[in-house]
Length: 138
Image 1 (spheres, rainbow, N blue to C red):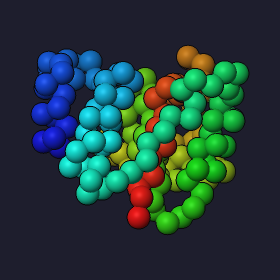
Image 2: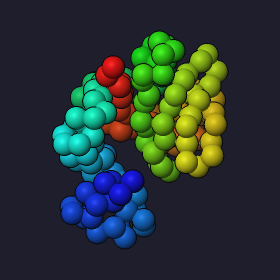
Image 3: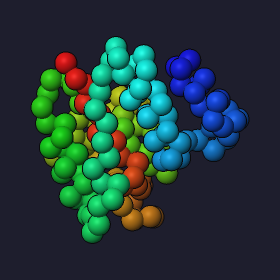
Image 4: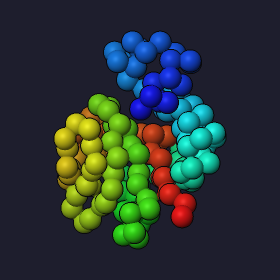
């Protein structure tokens, strides 16, 4: 946590994080500087990708199915970091009905139907550029 706060503070004002949250560009920068370089990359190597960032003609069903397929191996080496309009969450598993979370907000699971790529179409909006597939290398 200290590394995250320190790196964020180098780039931006910390009070902006507290009042406005972290947008996709800032998250990209933090992932690049903290997880893909230096100490953490050397000791805890991971692969991070954004499979939907540049994709066209996406559907919510396609995105959720691809996310579920990515998390299907149950060896706990993969997670998905997502942002909706409220905050960032870590998805650990997706089944036919629910997304399951490790979430600082206390949310354990949400219905798949609660998510949409379209604004105001459901409770949570998915942003294609704010979906990160993260895999730990062993």
